Length: 337
Image (cartoon, rainbow, N blue to C red; front, side, top):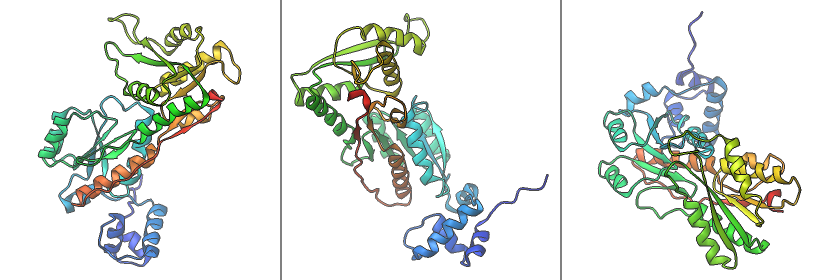
């Protein structure tokens, strides 16, 4: 088997008729270099066509950096939103020559990875970072940003409210459609029951539509405290017991519960309009590909991920990160028509 041929910056320079330094400036997106848009586009097109991949090892030696960003997600790696955001992160970091190191989110692990030179900064995805941990990271001068459904923010920046605004719009939607009798379904994992979405929705409903009646339904994911997690079919059976009751609207906080509840509603009575309307306070492209489509909140997670990665690179280059307001939008499907 022949030796694999690696495309280098010199190959790109020859292809485009420019210097290797110019190729390096464009690929690494270095600020302050006057390069025409035509030349920049020519180099990026040639790099993509020839399959050029910047050498993280070589760049690490030149810059004295690890050329890797730590992504801390806790237990969210299997979350649909996590994967979407990570796709956006990669789309920005990889062309800039950075790799990604997945981290559990344990504070000591983060500090050790940074001190050992394995990562240059940290991006927290859907991670509830305690204030004292954020303060310690700042004290150690470790660059970091946070990304969740509300947007992207760094230490000292104004809190992002994109998702909160969408939940408020959801409460207004209930008022417009006169959906008065509402059930909010939550899953309880062992002893853990945490859903900031319920608190957000209940508060918005109280402010915009106090005439509505809201009741929370909690479904335990275990048959008993010592047992394992119930299957989706087991959970669906439990949900269907509540779907026998007469009420107007079901609200779910995440994709898993959204699909389970929608399945339960359709098993009870497949008709449009649905006997029980349904809104899922989560983002999933699949919600609008299936039939009937589910009313849900679109969160631009890919765009958020790309923006977060770009701002982290700015931090690493000694620049102030920019701020951007993202919009989350309530997209109506057939489940509420």
